[in-house]
Image (tube, rainbow, N blue to C red):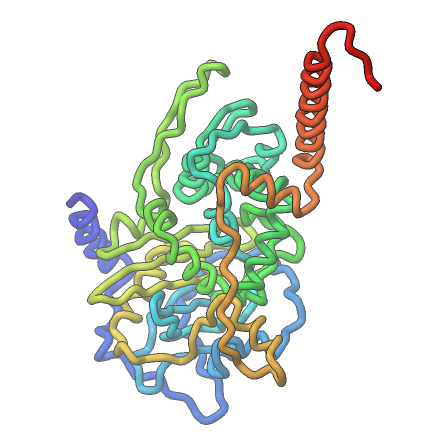
Length: 421
């Protein structure tokens, strides 16, 4: 109830501050001359941006993933549709979570830096590989994050349930939680990043390259609005993620052994408080990436997702830009489309098929968490000596103990004075 009241009040405030956009049916339709790119509607951003990192060379095949209409640095919108709202984001995309239809986009395959929206890739990769009830101990390496960056406030030696770590990651954007989850799910933060990149490839997010599990800036770290939509779609397909994304508050447990009390954290995504039908998402910001945002909502039986990169908070904050783009998406007909989100594994299946033609091969789902024994076996199969060495030692002790027991039993069975032949 409180969220609905806030939604109505915030809508009024936003209209007073930013000005009311023209009604969708009154906006000029999107038209373009044949072969000409339509400029994206932009709000002026009164901010001095830091130098952007040099992106990788453009690959035509990657820019056309999802449809030829998406291979543009300008606006992709259904012919005759109302113009989308002007935003400060350098690139964005609106898609249907259920059908995968892309309703509209601005430079969907242009490279951008993800900031903390990269945490969604961590969730898509490892959410179902770690037991949520497992309690793990934070290490000094987990807390090795950039000074002043977002953190949950984990303590070295503190013990935290995995579910609490996911909430700290998604509500508070904790970079410490990201490092710890990557370690728990893959053995180390570096191994976690490698698995994130493998998952991005499986999803079809070919322009995404992770360098850190948290989204803290690193050389060569990029994504695109299209790739973020693929990653977000995978996340929202998971019931546990949907529950976490809509959680307003969570409790970080006290650490009696460290003489530290517990505390509460709150969800930083304002969409869940102020947008009717919000499903959640993820905010992000670094000085280099600027504001990035992923948000999803449902209305009239439709679930849409919006992704945006390179935005400024003035004159309209990132989540508000996302909300305006969601409104625009919901105003379009249900069959409106300029492309689609590819299915997980689809691009690999096409590449493997003769002549590169599409195939009916079903995508292979990501590995699921199968309990402590299953996780240990998977890590042993992957050559993880941190598991192999102690397991081999334990097996040696068991075999030695059984041999000693059998020898003692045989000795007793011969009885006193009895000799071997």
